[in-house]
Structures are given as C-alpha cells and as structure tokens.
Amino acid sequence: MRIVLVRGDITEQRVDAVVNAANSSLLGGGGVDGAIHRRGGPEILAECRALRASQYGGGLPTGQAVATTAGRLPARWVIHTVGPVHSGSEDRSHLLASCYRESLRVAGDLGARTVAFPAISTGIYGWPLDDGARIALRTVRAAPATLVEEVSFVLFDSTAYAHFERALGDLGEIVDTP
Ligand code: APR
Image 1 (cartoon, protein in one colour):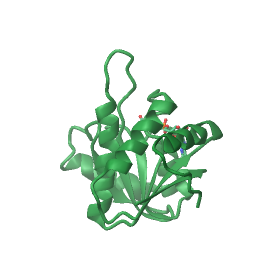
Image 2 (cartoon, rainbow, N blue to C red):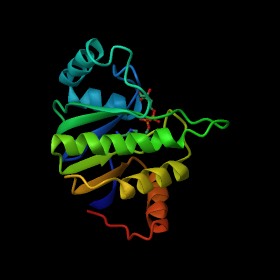
Image 3 (cartoon, rainbow, N blue to C red):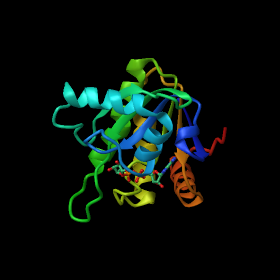
C-alpha cells in the first residue's frame, strides 16, 4: 500500500473514501468535520442522523469508524471516526491508532482503493502534531493488508506537513508526493 503526503484541503481530494475527524454525536462540528459537512451537503448529515437513530443511538465511540455517502464531495464515501481528546495524564494513543486501523478496515470492506486521512485529533482535540503523525504513519504502515492501494495524509498547513514528512522519514520511507 502506497502512502503519500498531500498539502491541501481534504474536501478537495478525489479519492474513494475521505476520513472525517468527527465527534461522537456524528452531527457535525468545526475543522475537518465542519468542512466535510459544508462542502458535502445535507445528504451526509441525513445518513449520520439515520446511524444515530439505529445502531449508534449513543453516538459513535472514540476509536471506531462508520461510513456514509460523501454527498457532493469528489469521493464515494466519508468514513467518520472519532479521535481521542489529548490528555496529559492518560495515554490514549491506542484510541488514536484505532481510528486509523478501523477506518482502513471499513474502507477495505467497502472496496475503497484510495483513502484520504486528515491528521486526526491534532486540531480541536489538541494532540501534538509530532506524536499524532507518528501514530498515524506507524498504524497505517502496520495495518493488515486490505484492498486499499493508496493512503494519503492530507495536511492543511506546512507545519503539519513537515511533521508527517519527518515521521515518514523516521519510518525509513521516502516522501512520495503525488
Ligand atoms: N482539510 C484537511 N485538514 C484540515 C482541514 C481541512 N479542510 N481543516 C482542518 N484540518 C486539520 C487541522 O488543522 C488539524 O491538523 O485537520 C486536523 C484535525 O483537526 P480538527 O478538524 O479540529 O479535528 P480533531 O482535532 O480531531 O477534533 C475533532 O473537532 O470539528 C470538531 O466535530 C469535531 O468535535 C470534533 C473535533
């Protein structure tokens, strides 16, 4: 599976599945969540509401992932996942790793070949970018083989991009820009 870094806006990615840094309500928010719902349109929220009315009555638990339509985005699906809020006293790294692992599993189950991730939890949820990048790349690199052929990490600013570039280098991988 190829890993590429992209500097840009995740709502503009022409991929099979776009991963949303959601919250457990699945009813939208700011950051990536706000951008995806704004640009993707009401169909996404309608399917999120249906999920809340059925198997996710209590909300989507942290670390889990679920797919909906991508609405008007240039993608087929949005995979919503809920990252952990960073804590200085409790190690929640396993929950952040679970977001990437579960999103990839859901993408593979859908038959997605290309998946775009944001830097989950590194915005409003306050996760340090260097550690968030390390967890993201190690988890994706170690994920079980699926149908997914390419994973892109879409970084909104040059600081985030630099952190992911360094983390990719630490994995002994060259940075492969599309
Ligand atoms: N494209 C790509 N990356 C983006 C975009 C975008 N359009 N907008 C923001 N980002 C970056 C942020 O700079 C940050 O590095 O995505 C990363 C994740 O930031 P958030 O979207 O704030 O997500 P997170 O930290 O996981 O917090 C989730 O925020 O929006 C709410 O409803 C959401 O409650 C949930 C919380």
